Image (cartoon, rainbow, N blue to C red; front, top):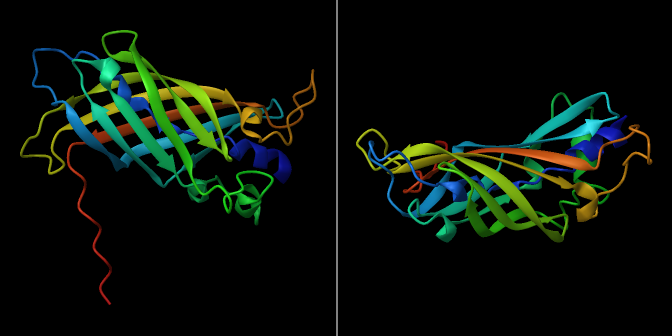
Length: 224
């Protein structure tokens, strides 16, 4: 049922996903802490996955592999923190997809990647909700539509620059958000009222991300 599964993938966002970083609150004073400043996303340690209901039988899950982002980190002043991220919808990865399924999801009916080649998130506010948690509000742009979303973020920890990490200081976050895909103009396959036969409107997004104070070295071109 390709059309049904197609809708499952049309929920990605996340991009957004990347708001995870904006939540660093207060870390234990006993250990050295990462300094405030500009951080870049460590793409090797970042993931954005999403899931949607598939006919009420299971939750179809997929992920994106090309993600980028930046973080303004200030653990002493969480409200001053900010994060932005982008996702390439063409990098959508699916478990053993049927032939042509990825192309179907990139078509006009779903992500319409030809016209909207970028999913983006930009934070608009950070509210500390605990010693290591925060609520990050921001604008998510998906399928050419921009809507506000809220991410619940946990600051997992970090460390200052040290000899063991060429990336400099490092911080890590986990985040979660939920929204309705129909709000972004992706509504095909949504079950009729009272039914689960289709692809659910609710999209659950999970983000894991690390940021470092130095950009990683550029990958070397393969030898010819």
